[in-house]
Amino acid sequence: MNNNRINIILNGKNVKAQEGERLVEIIQRHNIPLSAPCYHRSLTETGHCGLCLVGARRKVTDKFSVVFACTATAKDGMEIDTEYKEAVDKRNELFRLHLLRHPLDCSKCNKVGYCFLHKFASQTRFPGFTRIAKDHPQDIKYKKFGQHILFDATKCIGCQRCIRFCRDVLDEELLGLIGNENGYGEIDLYPGKSLDNNYSLNLVDLCPAGAFVNRNYLYQPVEWNLISTPSISTESSVGINTYVLHKGNKIFRIKPRENKYVNDAWMTNSARNEHRYFENRKRLTKIMQNGQQVPLESALLQIVESFQTNELAVVCSGNMSLEDQFVLRKLLDSIIHNVFFLRKKMTPDGFLISDDATPNVNGAILNKITTQEKIVDDLKELTEKIQTGQCKRILSFNEEIFSHGVPYALPDDLKIFYIGTENNKTSKRAMVAIPVTTVFENTGTFINRDWRLQKFHKAVNPPNGNIFPMWYIFSLLLSVYLDVSKKELLWLDDVWKNMTHTVDVLADIDFFHVNPGGILLKNYLK
Image (cartoon, rainbow, N blue to C red; front, side, top):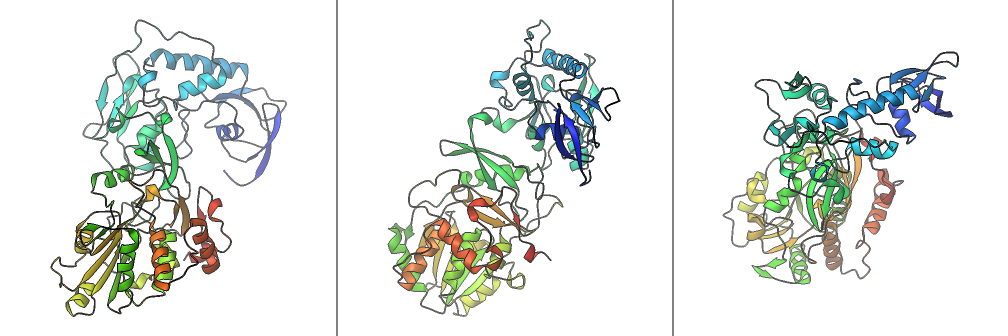
């Protein structure tokens, strides 16, 4: 497809298109009902199902011919008729064949509400056709295709999206179409293969008719009955776009949100389980001081007292949002400190997992909390300062310092202050521990590895009313330390306005209108 703009006629109306654009994309863009279950923008075109058949002709003098809308491309002056009788008749016959073989389990199918069969029938007012037959499949017989994937062959329509995903995206031949005893083609694994890679659950999203099932969601609420909130994965610096599906202040699942600049339509299996990390690990929910629960004001005063010494070390990483880092920068400008900014490494896979296991290192660089040269892999230097008496106060922001080289046996006069989400060794050893919200309980922004500013939204509430965003805690510390009665950073929009006045690259960006695809900060691209 090129950028040449052309004129075509779609159902009798003149419309604009791009030369080489697939007809199905033009039809869908103009909200004309057309089912194309085998088509996917990010996969090679095939024309397997035949449900996207339309009438098309290149010139007025030519006759209409039936073409596959998912493979045919637009030419200048082309006329497209989605209601061309021959195409409609063929579509209906093929649709009836799919209904004949499809099981009668809509009420308990995980694809209910998003099934192309439902959508096609409702949009086109498909004439009534009985699905009750003696040989109609009734029982669900799942095949195990891996640790998380189940396959129901009775629902398969032969679109081959799954085969093309493995071939085009994963660059592996894992699935193939094999003839069964009934004479139908059936998807199956190649001998010795298994769907246990970190991207296998994308097949569940891809399947248009519910043949692929995530076994973990068999007895959970169906997707249409959940609230969907846009978010960003914190798994790595890639910044995978996601939807958090929740209801009743409980997160049930996470699914990919399409962004052609970042993750296309895919995500890792591990990122789908990020909410379980917080569910499975013990959460810090109380404001603690010397092992006793205290009011927030008391805990803040204890931390502020440590600002008056030059023996303070601050430990942080790219886990904080851009808003957290901005208010932290203002706080650090007011106190004497040493900053230890941790690099958290992971094994990259060359696709959607980078070597940086945090979502916002570039945000810290933008806010001048650190530079690439000053980022450290461990806290050995901090340990040396503790042993030589140069450090007697540690302020840790959501970092478990004992897993990064700091020995648990520390001098008695060393005081640790912890602000974070987990009730870990650091929070238990800390003189003061203050809980904060997770990415699912907060709204803010991250800057991914490509310097793309991306926004995430609050999906659920924190466990109790004593848990606030980290930037809010920083703003309170700043107000208490400077004894400022005018509190300018206690609302998210105020934080962002201050950022736009302070950080030049953000000057023309409105936080509440950051588009779903994010904004590329071109000034920082190398």
